[in-house]
Image (tube, rainbow, N blue to C red; front, side):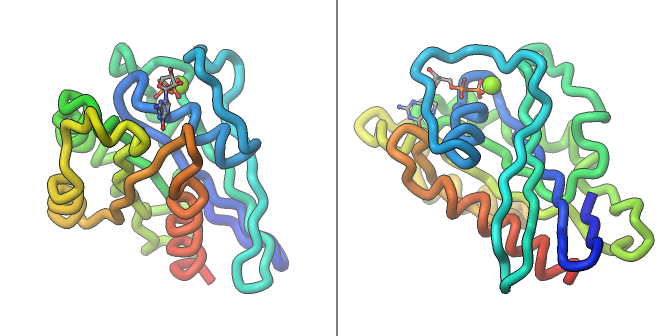
Length: 186
Ligand code: GDP
Ligand code: MG
């Protein structure tokens, strides 16, 4: 969903990754500048929209969050359909969540590398960002920055480390993805 109507752009972006890595909090930090200490499953909410300005143009980022289906690896293709951007999140304090990036990625890669249906943008590959979250928990880190950088390079993704708790790099993560999509379609 990279639609340009007049001066308006609408980009669908999906957030994927293991349970409890901070996906919902990254989204609430980005769209509402809020953090929730009690992890609650997002019920009934499919996506949230945030409007940004890129090069003087209005860009709407429609960011999709799972309602906990990732626990069962049951995220459906409807979730990915039409996405032009993806944030693939792990928790820097739990190596297991980093190890599952690759398998998760290959499961969904046929969906993520799909070409946008919109004829005008048929060569637009999905922009992907690897996100190491919970940077505020540096003292109990299990995954080094170098490992994140290497994996991202291997997969041809952007890479960033964030903290949804103290806001570090959260807006930047979304903005890099949104700007990259914008540059592809504009
Ligand atoms: P999701 O299952 O991937 O959507 O993860 P949630 O956003 O629900 O977060 C899971 C747990 O991690 C919650 O207890 C959050 O408060 C906590 N959490 C999320 N992001 C951060 C972060 O950047 N730093 C810290 N310290 N905790 C976080
Ligand atoms: Mg969640």
